[in-house]
Image 1 (cartoon, rainbow, N blue to C red):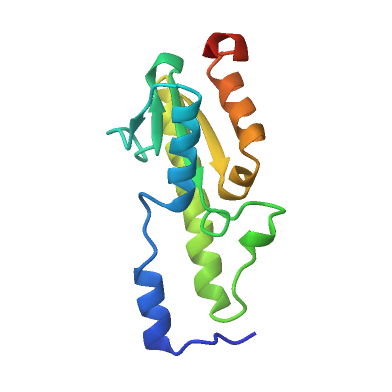
Image 2 (cartoon, helix red, strand yellow):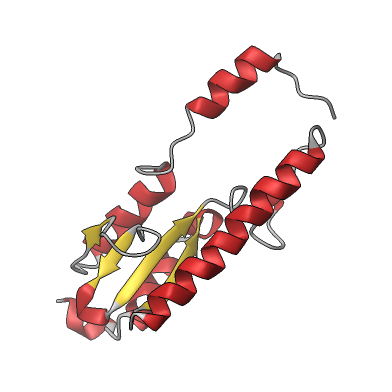
Length: 141
């Protein structure tokens, strides 16, 4: 399928895509707040994790399904035009993700990824966050 926008309009759309403060990050932040889990944003660590939960020694990344090639997710389908560019771009993102997570592990951090599509089920993500932080529901009162 060919792009429905001309080159100038597509460029304008792509410039509007930000890597910080995304809708998925905002949803995850709201969830962390609702669970009363203390966190900081975009700490000065390798890869600048989206959230740091120091009490749990956890670096949390919120990944967009398209940009980080979420396997098996319908939102991760590559465009059918300029395929070579997109394959190289997304593959580079995945290689960088692996390097960053490994650097964080070597520095003593645990890492986790929350995928954009999973944030549609807040209860499931909340349950996972509680497990990752070793906090049970009884501790949330």
